Amino acid sequence: MKYNTSLFGQILQVIPRRRFAQIVRTRKTERHSKGFTCWDEFVSMVFCHLAQSKSLREISDGLAVTCGKLVYLGMRSAPAKSTLAYANAHRTCEVYSTGITYMRSGHPVLNPISTACVL
Image 1 (cartoon, rainbow, N blue to C red):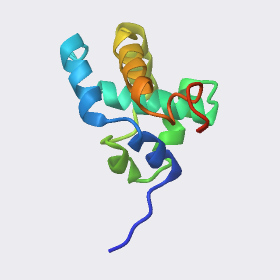
Image 2: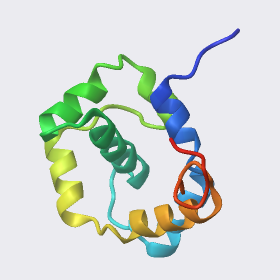
Image 3: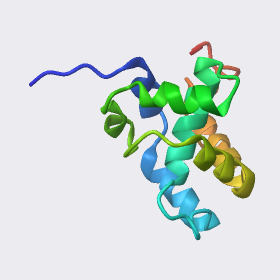
Image 4: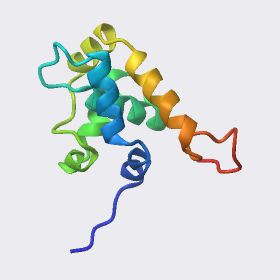
């Protein structure tokens, strides 16, 4: 069966998920996490940036509209506003800055300054 990946899914495929998980394990960021993983937060924040969301409600509702297609992005369900607020307040941004710095160093799409390839 042939299926098409969404544009948002294609953007997330650029990020190596195993390397992201390895960074999360070494930083111990998900130590007290009960269900909302760092990957879920990362996907939510990338969606926030690309959709130019102004509030947590726009992020939560925007992801909820996908009608079950979140599983292809690596999420189980759309996060609630309170879950996003708690994660943003209590999780450190080190894992994301380390991950993006590592990933930008070896990927031409994520590092447009060093190459002519622009996203």
